[in-house]
Length: 209
Image 1 (cartoon, rainbow, N blue to C red):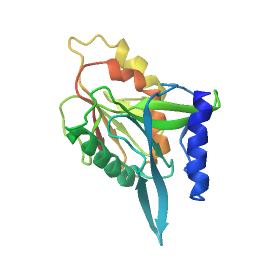
Image 2 (image 1 turned 90 degrees about the vertical axis):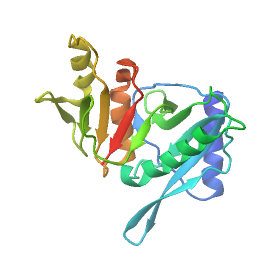
Image 3 (image 1 turned 180 degrees about the vertical axis):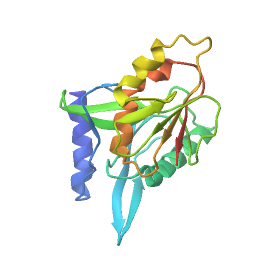
């Protein structure tokens, strides 16, 4: 019933404005339900040859969990700056701040046939190239492989490889993404490597360049 309620709200919003958001898809569920939430929509727009992101957060409440419904076609170079503005607004809120409120991205679970969510509350984005300071994982657009320690491997092998190494001190994991990568591809990678969130206690950093 919770899923139906959430999906119904999403469809009502879309129908009322005669437009849809195409959500990313995955066959893995990270979080299946989010209570006390506010929806935020980031639409895919075009103006001549330009791609634009249009944010609608008029129904958001600062003390609730935020669910960002983002069109999967948007490239990271356009959508992540908008996400950063939303994060900054919530982080700077003092009068009505709720320390327990989280931020989530929504996506479609193709197995369970419902909406699913992945948290990104603690992530700090930077629109620049990472220099050093940890184990940097560079993800390229439309590539299912990555180079780690001069070893090429599939993206879905990363977590197992890193956890199998007996580090004296676990390195800080730094994620770097191609700025032209679509939001759908980005989210699918995030879901694949989700277990790395518990690898160390450093503040998560993600670079888009």
